[in-house]
Image (tube, rainbow, N blue to C red; front, side, top):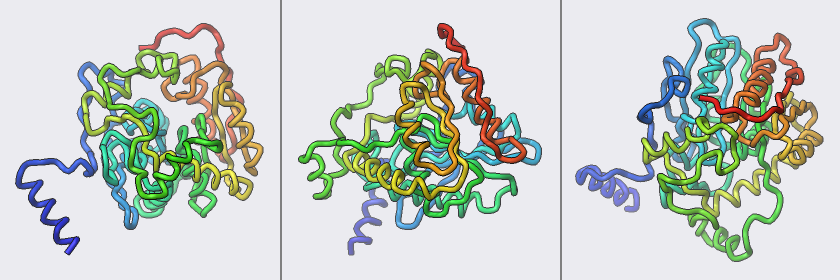
Length: 347
């Protein structure tokens, strides 16, 4: 009976021309006046990963015109869609890598679990782990035969660490400004709401999306005004990608994922490269100390969104990644020279 009612509702919505706010979103429209370096790589294609008993997650992929030397799977952080990583994807493809980008469960272009579309919501961290495993084992499969590296940004780090500890296959792991939450993140009242099934409620601080919201520079994510505006530009042009904050359930899930990742860190045998600004050095050093094979690179007074930073930081960050990905023996990158001069605008 319940299934029949669900099907009936879907048909009614379709007949009335109404859109299901939970549905995945694939083909985004480029913002007006977008610089070519922020376009998707040539040949970019969208797809949906379908983990068991979970809403589908959006991913994209592009390959070089030659046999790829490596495959890189990028996991964006909270509030970022794949489009924010197009510049990095283009550069990696131009160097000979097949690049995949998998968006987080319940946000960006991925299907929703319910509630407000602008709120990133998952009932825990298992949907993200399941989506990552589904892409790696079912979508990528054997792939080109080239070594596979996973590049996880921010709070995607605990998800991939948990997946690796469960046997996810990868030649190497790269964590950029990893964010692992271990302290108190919500009041006892909010925690009780999650336990009683109200995890879809917005977490404290979440607000409705605004076209005049703060950009990456004002949020202290980057020094670069052009790259700092990319996320907002894509969201302005594509309402389905808009982000207003996480849910209580998402936040509780990341706490659980962080604790699980730290517990299992010493059992991870794959080589890990950690890239972080000095402001995140405490977290980065603690994580590296727990991992069996870890190489740490710090980037001075850069802000945490290293993929969106000014060229003086970002160039060294990208060099560290490419040295790791394309090294013949899969060895960790050599220390990159960091320019700590006054930042300049980059168009």
